[in-house]
Length: 419
Image (cartoon, rainbow, N blue to C red; front, side, top):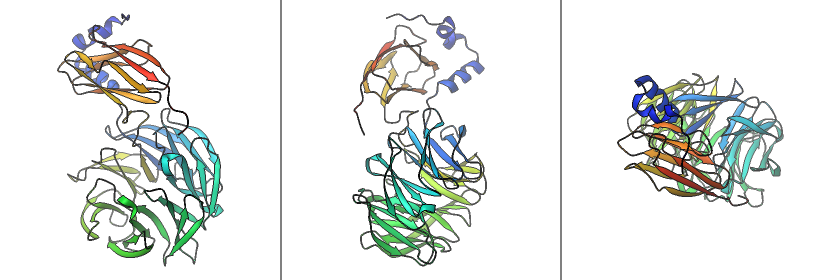
């Protein structure tokens, strides 16, 4: 197998100047995890590369972006327009809106249903929860819930808990996911803000407007059993799987607080930006991303060290959603190691829609050039990576752009229908 490679590519690793090498290295680096930030007053979503700490795209969406969820395959990002009547669907590969779904006035919170096949939408202005087919965008069914605001689905997919902000009748409505019927309510004395299940689904963490504490709900008995004192205006409390501590975004002091789920006591806090609103976790579980609505920024937080990195985004960022399965970076794809001047494995088989990640584990520079002329990586320094997504079945041959005798092939099989 022989390819016609530009002579500059073949000489690049040897004769490129320091500035040129740096530029190529940046271009060749694989995209890391992305977080999507809804800028409420800009009517945009900022797309942020977490590893690089920078905005890589700004996507116009329906007015008043509020709820955001990323599809199970990482290909689509659903954004509710709370000042409109629609949900915008962003194509994660192209960073543009591919579809607009009309759901009724004032859609707010979103949640991804079991298996990622449905998106639940809290349509506040229509007093209902809409069950939207994630693939087609069609509304399959609705459930009557007065003034729904946010939604949390039990990890086993059996029930959805919906915060209801009906004046004079604040509650959490419990919706059966099989029948789409409300089967019970939890009465509240204050307006519910957000609610999130802990690992296993036995506990629900609920925040209330005007309450300086997180309410801990027994999701079997469906009653409040404890509180986590936080100070003024806790907005969202999460106990992410894999973390020994839970986290609370507390707006008053501008803090990310960490609590012990066993004792419900706050153990420590990290200062973040002005009027923090939301939090999500990176796929590796090592960093947290907090939106600062009053500061027009997000903070990327390292819980272990307490260090934060601030990134400017749009006007009034509210919800953030992490791309846990990346259609750009291919976090769930196959890995190929470049070691000892060879691709390991050389022949690689995947399914259409998956990605391959190449990492230079050698001591020498390498690169990638594809026979189908798709963009490759002219230069990968030791430790650097490159990812390509393959959407069509076929055989894709490639070589090292520095050492033409190094060859490999990716065999892409047809994907399964449905899902």
